[in-house]
Image (cartoon, rainbow, N blue to C red):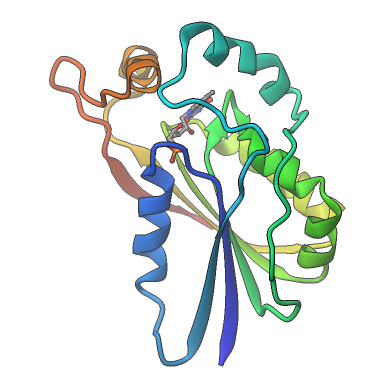
Length: 185
Ligand SMILES: Cc1cc2nc3c(=O)[nH]c(=O)nc-3n(C[C@H](O)[C@H](O)[C@H](O)COP(=O)(O)O)c2cc1C
């Protein structure tokens, strides 16, 4: 029996849904999945108040990370770690950065194969480069990446993304944000 640890941080539940769908494809008989949420010590609001959203920009872009809760009762012999993350201002979200900087992450990821799983609007390439650096720092081995981006042309996202994140409403003028599958090796 192989053991897979799945770590994620999701605010609205979009990434969580993607992860649940992803792990539902794993065969139950051969694989034990341990699904764990990364929790900031001070939760972020959703929907975001206008000023709080843009106030997050410098810290997220500079990858300061936020303080996160320690994850309890983790095992120490996972065969694979799946790291599910979203993008905040072209960087991995602050709770993911915060977690990757903890002593717990250093122990957990050392010498472990990792698959990254991204769900975001559509701009994830730069963030993935940053995550590669974070994984290298904790001695992990990135073996694959899966990215799912929202439907709709990129130009619309300048209107639809703030509308969604500041109000919680996903639809604007008939354009929907639905994840579509895009695999990157
Ligand atoms: C503060 C903030 C900044 C974001 N910046 C980006 C971005 O630069 N590129 C992108 O594709 N998506 C961006 N998003 C969208 C997220 O990556 C993600 O799709 C959305 O927040 C839903 O994730 P959830 O599962 O945590 O609710 C941003 C979201 C937030 C909250």
